[in-house]
Image: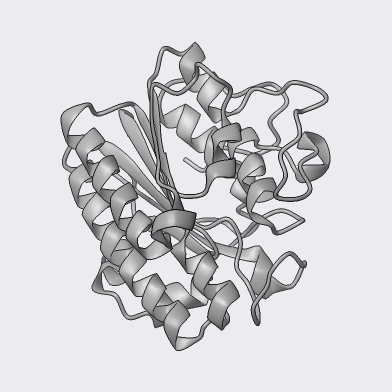
Length: 259
């Protein structure tokens, strides 16, 4: 263990869709990762609140973001990128949903690329995000890279979770996961693959299992394949990454390292 970390998050990707999409990379991840298909996100199961909980390792009632509109934290709290910066680690962001810019404080990110999905569409910008992240991995190799792929969630809202169109977006996202992980693993990265929430019908945000359950895969040299424990939470991801990279968690964090 040790070295660097790549976190790939596919917005709205349900665990059952991961299995049912039939992508060959899924089988490879199941065989070579420490994983669970029943990790839980936080309420409300909405994109910005769940991301804030992932990066700050506290539930939404503590960070105060309860919708997709960002408001400054009443009580400042270091997130993942701030803790990594304090340990002199470099962080990079690649994403296609603009509100995610507020996940980290100014100055804690050394490299970032945002692709405007409202102009180019999520399918095209997912590809652009992937290409930019692969270039960063191969040419600059920052210590922590966050890759956000937003198309699956957009397709869920447009045509319904588990619709044919939704499942195609999941399969294509796994094409991108496979390319990203191939580039990262050979350079000593630990690769995390997860989602922020699931969905049902054409929505999400409830405490139903369809909305709350998320997949989580952790793969890298020295990480023994197996299953993560019952009760694994999205809030456990940041503590795990800081431990792998030799940084310290914030005192207020509620999640636990998984490795």
